[in-house]
Length: 59
Image 1 (spheres, helix red, strand yellow):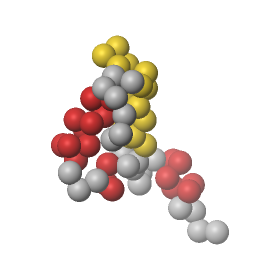
Image 2: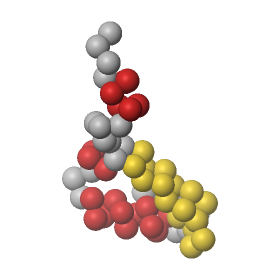
Image 3: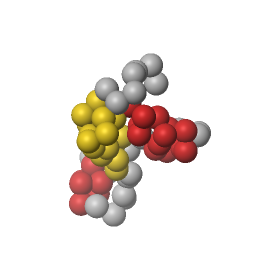
Image 4: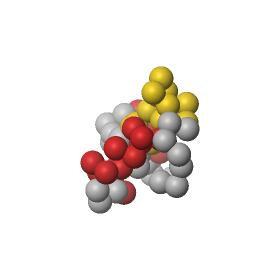
C-alpha cells in the first residue's frame, strides 16, 4: 500500500480477505501501516448471522 509505516490509528478490513490472493502479504501490510498502539478491525462474512439472512431475504 502506498502509505508510510505506522500512519493509521485504525485499519478496517471489512469482508475483504476473500478478495486477496496473497493473504499473508495483505496481513503484513495491515500491520505495517497501523500505528504500534493502533487497532486492526477485521471481519469475514458469516451467512448464519441475522444481518446476513436479512440482507439475502428474497425481495
